[in-house]
Length: 391
Ligand SMILES: *[C@@H]1O[C@H](CO)[C@@H](O)[C@H](O)[C@H]1NC(C)=O
Ligand SMILES: *[C@@H]1O[C@H](CO)[C@@H](O)[C@H](O)[C@H]1NC(C)=O
Ligand SMILES: *[C@@H]1O[C@H](CO)[C@@H](O)[C@H](O)[C@H]1NC(C)=O
Ligand SMILES: *[C@@H]1O[C@H](CO)[C@@H](O)[C@H](O)[C@H]1NC(C)=O
Image (cartoon, rainbow, N blue to C red):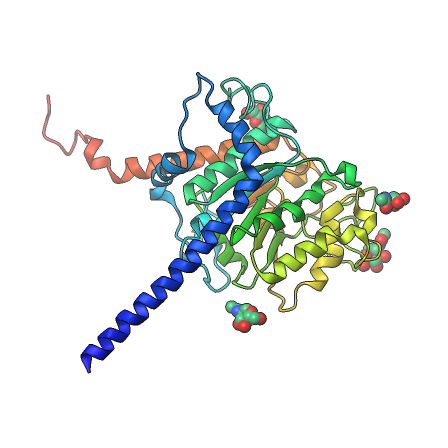
């Protein structure tokens, strides 16, 4: 009987619409409220700076992001393409199920966190116009200026949220500052499906390749809590095991961390940040200030306890997200020649962060120009041989 079926469909439709509205509303409300508290101070100081007479005020969320996104529309790589070929002609394949088929957009937060801030002379948040040519890219504000711009642009292109979390020092707590990661990531996972941390000396190399494609390549699934790259192997003071945990397994590097908001992830972040207390992990206190701090603690303890299905923690290949081209020649003590094919991590030569930012940004603009010129050549190219004489 058609009318009943029709009514059922309408009823079910209205029902699910209301459930959807309820959850959507709740999620957005709570996320906005909690985020507001955390960033109130930051926003008021930022708006003061923005309203100085010589700097134009625009809304980053309203106009800028869609404009950037549409500028790069022609070169954006599909989320589910079976492979990707870079500008050197090297091809990378999807090796796992294509789990992520829809854009995640603002469900993803790309976060920079640092106790330093690039607000000095010739730095991105500094008082004067940035001179890119003379900017040094040196460790500190120079390096931060380069990498933050790279991370920010990547987020604008793909519609991810971006934040810079200027952290307070953990030294008074007796911890090295890099321990901030599990605290801050755990906090922002309350508001986002994915939180992606990129270190201040790391750059996203192919700005047109979305995270969803990389998640598909690396096997980050719906049940994956955390993904990090396998560290480069290095010899330190003659110790060939310097990059290994006490079980002889190569450590993971926390220079690039993908975390998904799942119950297990919150347990993991809690265990990680409380690791040095030694309530759960005897011996973890050693890594409070000794290298490699939170990174070693994660590799030594957490990764063995929070991977029940084998896919809850994904180890990203070293060549994909560690090192950069020329690393091994420059630093022979680093045995694995990882090229940072998708995420370059300039651990030993921090100033190279700016070089990689140069290449990534110019390459993206170049590709945009190339595709526009090439595919619209009929509208601005006059081929004298083919056309009738115009003289
Ligand atoms: C994720 O984990 C849940 C609970 O452990 C399980 O039921 C589900 O099949 C898993 N999903 C995938 C895609 O592995
Ligand atoms: C290096 O690791 C291997 C395997 O875990 C172990 O047999 C060896 O003793 C370690 N060497 C040093 C110098 O720690
Ligand atoms: C750091 O390592 C040194 C040398 O192994 C050790 O003596 C010291 O106790 C460690 N620091 C902490 C906080 O455990
Ligand atoms: C990085 O860029 C600077 C400035 O353009 C240049 O002088 C330097 O040679 C570059 N370094 C490498 C290793 O390419």
